[in-house]
Image 1 (cartoon, rainbow, N blue to C red):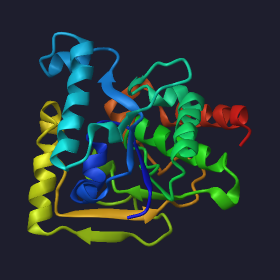
Image 2: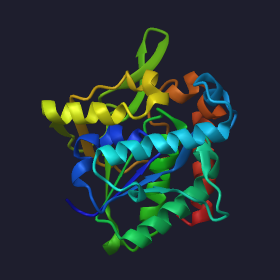
Image 3: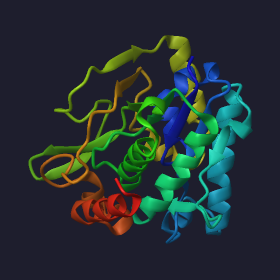
Length: 262
């Protein structure tokens, strides 16, 4: 197993991505870009928490429980801290692209990974797309000969049926170049991954939409973040996540690239 920096948007994304093999990833680092708790408190209330702080703490403890189940130290889960020492709220990464990219860059310089595992740019969640861009920006801020390989795990994006937009899981958005590696999981691996996902009790309803039969990866394609990931309505636009449109996200990317000199 090479030295891997896993950069995911939310607690549970890393288990969805690579849960079946996390027990073999000792020495790797798992970075959560957000704290998993939207700042408006609606999710916290919906899940029965009395306060946003309690919900944040629960999301962290759920991740630590999953790591322990994989036999990994909780210290391998590194929170992403911005330069002012603050954390990024769930659904807030798209508004802080420069700061997130710089924070990812600090992890790259500290760990010197051979591989960075992250999300694809697919319009599924604004935090996913922000993380995808931040990893791209951080990697391109490193000298070419020292850049790690960026690998993506399958996530989710908009599926359509007539006029309805819904969450499509279990496959990459069609059309991107590059070979997809499909890892079929053994029964034991499926049991292990299902148990790890069970640690995220607050997310049980959402996680029911994801299978545990396989994990899928590809080398990140050469994205043009100035373009929409696909035609039509993006999933996060349809669900209103983060209060951001695809057009607004791409404008933020343009401004971030200018500020970062990319």
